Image 1 (spheres, rainbow, N blue to C red):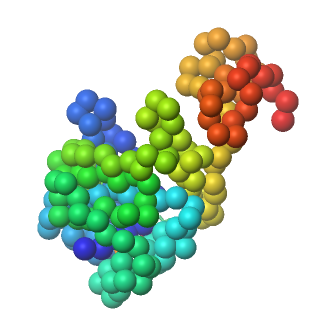
Image 2 (cartoon, protein in one colour):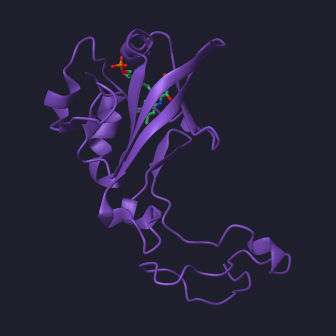
Length: 184
Ligand SMILES: Cc1cc2nc3c(=O)[nH]c(=O)nc-3n(C[C@H](O)[C@H](O)[C@H](O)COP(=O)(O)O)c2cc1C
């Protein structure tokens, strides 16, 4: 059982439902994934940023990161790797393919289950990035993207130059529900 920070984790396919994580061969986690063929992608919130950074600085070879961070392991439904209670979204995965390119190995996995805390879902049961307090890593800095900009496909009903489109109704703290011209 281990925790590893991974920025190189993303969706690969919707049908079949696949995600991937890219891990350097030197990491302890790389060996664990090869050995068990299973892992859980835990989406953190800004509330546990210290723990995220810590888990990306030390190795599970040397440290029990659950004990060191105080994060809480919870049993998963289909895999032996644990969910993390403090993460609002946890995705259980089983390795389908492994590809090695150089600095990182690509683990592509079938999504077996998605666990989402009610508190981070909107009325349509979609994860709301603001409620999740999503953390982004850019230029070796952590950021919290929380400004709503527009709905997908807003370019189809708004003129060029519009940088803010239709706001999501009832999204906490969102922009008003009308089309806005670029103003900032
Ligand atoms: C925010 C953040 C993101 C990271 N993303 C990755 C990544 O995608 N792939 C990777 O191999 N290492 C990544 N790292 C580095 C590993 O988390 C780090 O080497 C860690 O100590 C490996 O732990 P382990 O040996 O217990 O597996 C990241 C580190 C941080 C802080």
